[in-house]
Image (cartoon, rainbow, N blue to C red; front, side, top):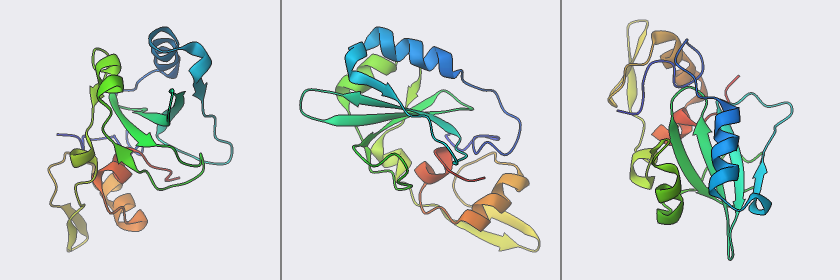
Amino acid sequence: MILLAGITGFQPAPSTKEKDFKAICYSSLDSDGVEFVETKGFVKNFYECVIKMKSKRVHALLNSQYPFIAFTSSRQVDELNFPFIDDVKLSNIFSPYYEVLCFEQLNEPVRYHRQCKNIILDNENTLHQVELKQLAYWKPKTVGEIVFNYWD
């Protein structure tokens, strides 16, 4: 299950450490090919590293609450759309440290409805009602948009 309580960043949850993520990236990858994205003016629930490989650039996203990592194809840093991809090489590098989420998991459609004042999410989850209300407000279309979000 991916949608664990607190994963959105709106409720208390365990946390991953950005400094540990940076250390893993620098030690596992060519340090000249690693750039960390610091966003100004955006509130997000993930850390982001741009990995420059021979023929492509890949963004590694690490949820700031749970040790879930995913990869996107090259995109603008402030672009809110995440073109998630599977990358075997990067999955092998990061899987000893984090749970690598795949394209299929991240692109699962979000299905919810209202029941009286409550929001009911049909996807398997343990989210708090506060998070579900945020979900109803921001209207993510996929699980990946919940796990990696710019909600404030």
